[in-house]
Length: 151
Image (cartoon, rainbow, N blue to C red; front, top):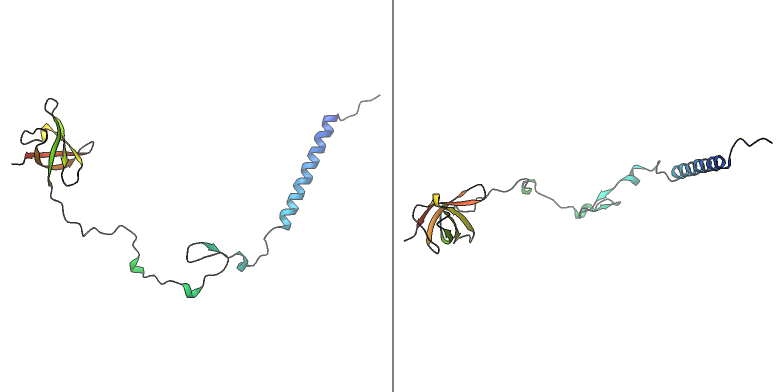
């Protein structure tokens, strides 16, 4: 007796392959049936309403808003209203370590703390001293320089 040329697993694989081909053919025909080819240009048009939403109906010309081109700002407006700040500020020394040579001054105008080093002092200062100073930007933030005691 002769053995059959194809085994059971080969037959099963062939059935699965044929089934996949049939499913693929069906999906292809379904896509063709549901395709949107042949639609007119009007059916494919989309419009944006006055609120910025996409709709299928054209906008109402009576609701059209006129915009003056000169009113559109593309960049940041100029800052003309702000007065020039004087470079000399006043503040109170909140902390000063004489042995290490640094401390902090609380600016009375902005209420921010500014670092001060002994090299930026003109007069010797202590904690709770009222001083005038100028601010320069350092590596880690604002630094007080030209620090003088207020008399």
